[in-house]
Amino acid sequence: MENDDTKNRFCEDLVKHNRLRDFSKWFFYSGMLYGSSDKWWGKGGERPDAHEGLDICYYLDSKDKLIQLQGLLWIPAMYSGTVFEISDDDYLGKSIFIRHGARDSNNLILHSVYAHSVPARGLCVNQTVKQGEIIAAMADISERNLSIPAHIHVSMVFLPEDYPKDKLKWQILALTYQARLVDPFAYLDCDYTVKPYVPL
Ligand SMILES: [Zn+2]
Image 1: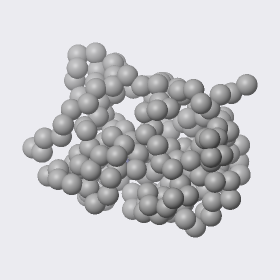
Image 2 (image 1 turned 90 degrees about the vertical axis):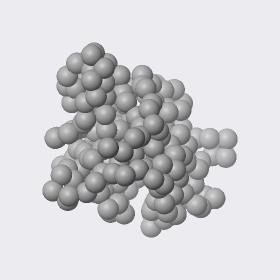
Image 3 (image 1 turned 45 degrees about the horizontal axis):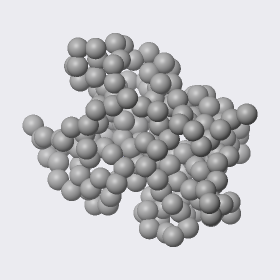
Image 4 (image 1 turned 90 degrees about the horizontal axis):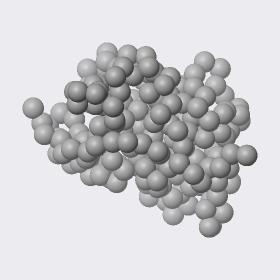
């Protein structure tokens, strides 16, 4: 019996599936965290909107050396569930919405979202996925000449059962009373350290 209320193994699965060498713990700039209004790339400064999720881009090795995620990076599902939508509303790639079994006290349903991603071949809406199953790869944005490094963005959001799919856009999700975004760290079992971003 799966339990979507407990913390999941997503961070551990990322290390395992991608064979992250000499992994010690995750590393975040404060601007990568949920709700932050800071940029963690380029010259820094403020984001246009508070961050709707968590950006995953770096880890520390056993010697405390900062390692950036790059190349082909597999993204596993946080919990078992069904693919609710694969949307295009993302300037860095697609967003995959997975519907899980957990509900909040208002009967809203937990969804995990994986942005800036390239869906696994054949992944389609209504498909069932298992916890830890590869659902996507991190989008390779190296050719786009952006100041932001390639990274995995994950969000957790509670939605009503009949939430319209045309409203699965970040700007709407952040503002509508129908959706309740939550801090992914409430669900991720993850050892990490946080530092402020200092532009070079
Ligand atoms: Zn993000």
